[in-house]
Every structure is written in structure tokens, then in C-alpha cells.
Image (cartoon, rainbow over all chains, first blue to last red; front, top):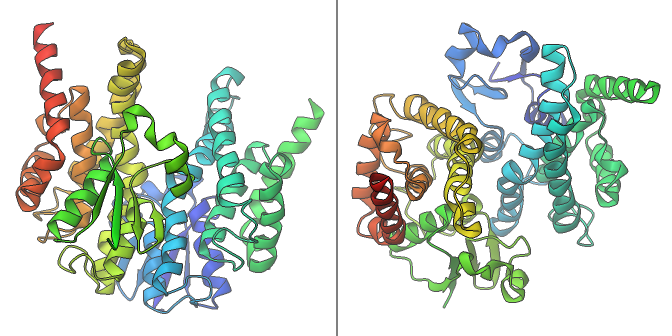
Length: 228
Length: 228
């Protein structure tokens, strides 16, 4: 098949690309990796991506890493619709402005909280001490607040205007991640709450499909928390 | 004038854009901001960029933030040459792959070390305790090693091949930053050392012009260190 996607649905940008390709009705060969088993460190995958990260695509032998670079490439190759990644220069610039901001502005902080609160404790088998989590929580909430007020909260339905774009999909998959660590951004940030429902609706049924395992883990977390 | 650039040469992506526009012989109106005086938090600049960060461009009234989004836009608008930002899909993808990686892969760690070792101590008037710097140094050196071996060190002169691109310019301006904190990546990483000279040569005299203040601060740091 022409297009292969290497991914794990526990990875935020993997979910974004998976949902995007399904939504765009773009056929792809599914190359599922289990990060929890360290399959990305294996010899076979390292030969594909020396950086040992997902997602990765292989398009007729052209191997490309980095999710944002991948969607730009898929857009140029006309594999995803202009409606969600506009080709007009200024409209594209608005989408890209958010995607570039999101690396250190949103993704970093949600991912670090998830890592310290959920991932590392899951691996070592004991919870992180609350005092070691405080700083990560504070930085994540500052990032969520900036996203909630300076990107959303400007009177539009979506990040760059009243049309949903890949910027919304990428942001949504990042905002979902801390749910696995028992933190739901929708409970504290109302613009995020309203917006996330619209993004989910737009990309369903693929959105829910990609978040199935995440949602199960998130629900268990809440059950455990309510037992304490 | 058609194009305005808001920048401070103490900021890595500001230097990248400044050098790029000078190199491309692209006329722009210089809008210098002094971050050290907090001018980016002022009312006037906040009205231009609600995120209160440089660099920013204003192109005939179209205001755009985020340096990587800005160069993509400048490329589409034919304001920078194809030779350093190729338009061919696969070649562009290779440049973008690096630029996306560099946010959390290189920039974050060099910038955090600079911040903790130099910037905050300069503001509060006393040096950070070494034990608080160790983690930042370790993470920066891991990032520099990955850059040195997995992006450089592949038998090419530059990051994406034997032609210099904006990827090299952006990386170079990030790698220069810790010099102000008394750490020169060229001393420990030989591929970076060889490559950085080539990038500097290619973009001179603009490269040295943009790094003049940084180099002065870096030299003072080394003098101070040798006196201890």
C-alpha cells in the first residue's frame, strides 16, 4: 500500500494523524507499535526512525517523522482536504502559527504532567509524591489558561476562526492526555469544555475510536480517586 | 514599508529571522524591542501580539507570530529564496521535519539552561546554586548529543543534506544561546563545531552582526570564569 502509518494511540500526535487519515478517507496500512513494550526502541523500528518516536509515515518509500511536518506534507500531496488545512497563504499561516506555538505552549506541559503523574508511577509501581507534581500541575494549568483565553475565548468556534482545522485536532488530542492522569481540563476551563465537544463531534466516530483506551484509563483513575 | 520585523537580538528566533531577511536582501522596517526592559509586556506591543513574544512580522497589515510559521509564510510569499527553503514537497518536508523536532528537541533545553544559568541570576543579582543547574545542563547536553549524532554526523555538510537551509540557521541560533551562560557547545561536540563554522560563513556578515552582543557577553563570561 502507498501509505503506512506507524503509531500508538497512547501518543497524542499519533491519535491526531490516525483520526485525520480516517476522517480524510485516506487509505493507510496500519503499523501499530506498543510504546509500553518499548517497541520503538527495537532494532526494526530504529532502522525506520533513528529518533525512536511515533508517529512516522512511509509514503511510497519516503519516510517522514514529526507529526506537524507530516500533515504539511500530506496537505501538499493532496492527501488531506483543504477544508481542514487551508492552502491559501494567510489562512495556512494562522493554522501553522498555532501548530508552532503548541509544541512548547501546550503539548510540553500537558505531556510532562501526564508523564510525572501517570506514566512514570505506572512503570515504577508507586505514585509520585504530591510535592514533586505541584510544579508540573501549575505549569500545565498556566498553559491551559493561556490556550483557553488567548487562542480560544476570542469569539470564534474554533482556534483560527469559525471553521475546524488540523490545529483544533492537534490541540484536542493534547488536552485529552492528562485525563489519563485523573485531570480533566474541561472541568476548570469553560472555553476548552465547549470547544472540545465541537472538535469531538466533527471528527467522530474516529475521535472516540482513537480515544477509547485513553477514556477507559481516565475512568478508572476517577473511580480510584473517588475511593480514596 | 511593506514588512515590519519586531525583534530583540537576545532572542534566538529573532536572530534567525533578522539574519534571514538581511541575507535574502528583503527590505524590512526594524522594530527593535528590549526584552530586558520588559517592552514585550507593554500595552503597545501586547496590542500587536497578545502572546507578548518576539519575533513578530507585520506584512502589509497581516500580523504573524511564531518564527517557524513566519518563515513558511515568507517562503510562500516568495520573500525568501527557494535555495534555503525548498518548495519541492519532499525537500521541504526534510527541512520542516527538523524545524518541528527542534522546538522540544534542541531549543527547549538550550533555552532553559541559558535561563537558569544566566538570565534569572542576571535579574535577581545572584548566581543559581550549581545543584539547581545540574539537571538543566544534563538535559541540554543530551539534546546537543542527539543533534550532533542523529541530525549532524550523517556524512552531510548540513542538517538536511549538502545544501544549507533555514533548518541550519534556526539550529545555529539556538546552539549559540548557551555561550552567554559560559557554555560553548563547540568545545564538546565536534560535528556541531565543524557545522557551525560553515553556517556562520554562509550567512556572514549578517550572522556575526546579529550575534555581536551575544559574543561580547559570552567573552565576558569566559573572562569571569578564568578569574575564579
